[in-house]
Amino acid sequence: MTVKELMTKKVGTCAREADLSAAVKVMSQCNCGFVPVLDTQGTAVGVLTDRDVCRAVATTSRPLSHIAVSEVMSHPVFACSPDENLETVLVTMAKHQVRRLPVLDKTGRLQGVLSIDDIVLAPRRRGSPTSEDIMIIDALKAICRPRPVEIVMS
Image 1 (cartoon, rainbow, N blue to C red):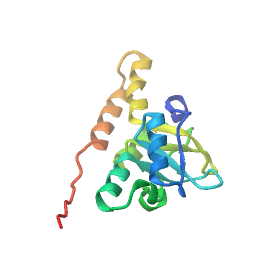
Image 2: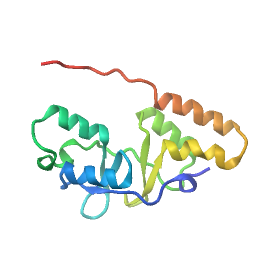
Image 3: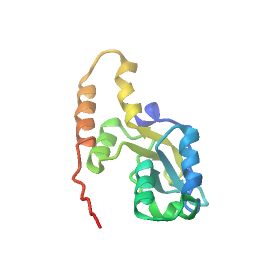
Image 4: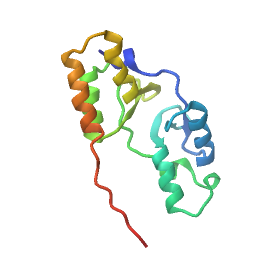
């Protein structure tokens, strides 16, 4: 199974010059916690997650409208291509412990997003569990494994 068979093609995006207030509106309108960040040529330069926004709120006293997306976005972009197979993508997701990957063409332009939800629904589309389904479950366990978090109190 390839990425293009599973990915979500219509996704919200934001510019790195945008402020967090605008980015949060996109997340709200798209009912998602993840937006690819694009430069002026439409090339993916980062991603912004709801977690990135929460960290910005927790670590700064500025309003969201005074914080640029570029200040808090995650980068480099861990991404995949439409023709990649699911096994390769699962390895990437597990290695970087990410739940969503922008799908980029050869020039870095956004084609869509592949999410855990897209992958989890794949076995249901096929009918009965396969060895690929078991591989998916193992990868999901690795992706969702708790990571150590350092809490600094001041």
